[in-house]
Length: 396
Image (cartoon, rainbow, N blue to C red; front, side, top):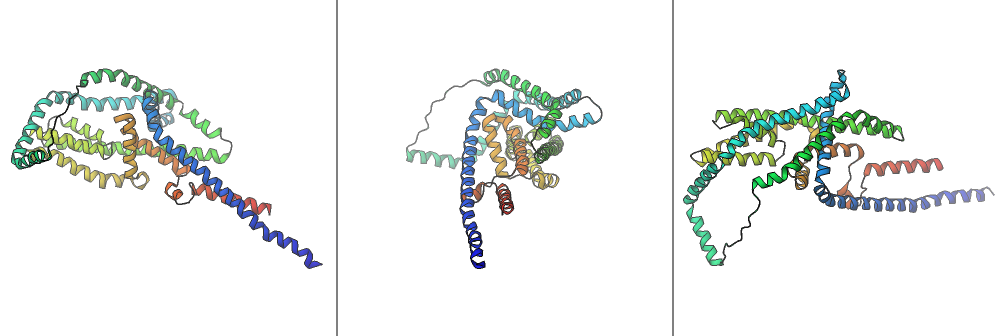
């Protein structure tokens, strides 16, 4: 009688894992299906977003610029508020300080650049003459090209369509640029002024204490990381500008302050900015020197300086905390410059750094592992598995 009573419970215990296994498989399949939908929606958003942001650039570009500026300038406003400055005046002073630095930098760069533009036709003629002399030394290449053209029977006929002049393009673009700049600064001021209320709303309007703590950590990490990165990179680029100014002065290059300011500004664009600086220095050097080799000397000196700065100085100062994949930086540069041009290229790295800091707390999607059958968010899947095991254990 005792053995008969013990049989059914053992049968139930043996059957329970078999019942739990299909349920776990179904939950895993549902989670993977939802993850696949999230990936498809994310890819669709990634490819559709540029067209929306480009068409609505009058609205979205000032908004994104204001968000980035708010993240950068909020620490300065907080520091002023700690000294007893009212919030409105602290926000206004932080914005005016940035505006003053921007105007000073543009004045140092643009004022000598205007005089340089007047010499542009003569520089073009000199550069053409230098390359004509170089081509004469390798005339056999041109002859070989002509012979190949005769053999292949190719002709170089084309139609030249006259486009708008530079002044016409500037005349059409100036009102839009002024409106977007004014909107960006107004949004920045109101966002900085409302930063305290926004923090309180994000912290205290959450449904649980854990969500409030996570929101506080995300806000602090994003603001600290982006602001520290911008401040550190600005100091490094300012040092590059000072060295370029001294080097241009020693080499006898006209307007050395302009070249230093231009090197500082372009150094904010990883890879593309220094390359553009090398090309500009090469063009100006060849146009003002007697030989091509002497003309390439300023560009070579800058290239050596940039090599030391990019491979020794910047990594040692920034450290691993701000290290980002060069592939991701180039993708962000091409993505946002495609949408918003030069301004988008300047905003690309701060936007990438903001997203990186955000995903470090929320969780990065495991896209490559997801293709091979892994979870899209391993940490979330593990947490759900632990919670399911605890629930099953309590039920047992």
